[in-house]
Image (cartoon, rainbow, N blue to C red; front, side, top):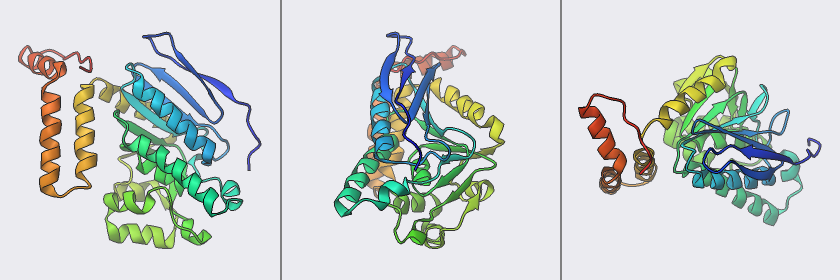
Length: 280
């Protein structure tokens, strides 16, 4: 297990109120041009432990309330790993009650990311194994380095994924492929991940963060409420029958239609100019 790092103060730049500060041990967060970049910093492979999960919840709560942030990028420090799984050293010492507590905080973190009102892009810079792949699957979009590697190796340790992997994976790749990846636990590369739609795009490692920021900046120019309604309709609809999903879509459509941004979007279209959205 890595040596304990000294807590760092991470400034979240906010042009509206001069910045927010919080004490973080394993995360950094930088905000620029409506885009927040959250980096998991536990070198060399950024394993997830209870403290990381709690800090993810704290940061995403802050970003949820920050009106200047419209898109979030989640990545790992260094070039070796996005997140190479959960911290096995912590897990090995837990009894059942301790493991249930860890599972509770991990589930809260993954759900917080999945249900954030703002788009979340995973920039996968290296290994995404076990809990690291589960973390990526909780994000809306995934861009990876061509050197990235993926796996759910849990069954080889006598356990199974406990952070949503058995559920989120099959919704993306289908049940048959999900069982193959989960049962065998074999490593697969970036091209295979792209083929299976686990990632949206593969780029050279040196272009990863820049590409993620390009996507984020493009999304930041979209109407925030409409994006939020899209996310609600897609996420909630994926767990519903068609008629219920259509009802959710109609409700989300009505909410988006009632905004000032809708008026601005239609007006800008008629006037043949670029719209300026304010998130209202």
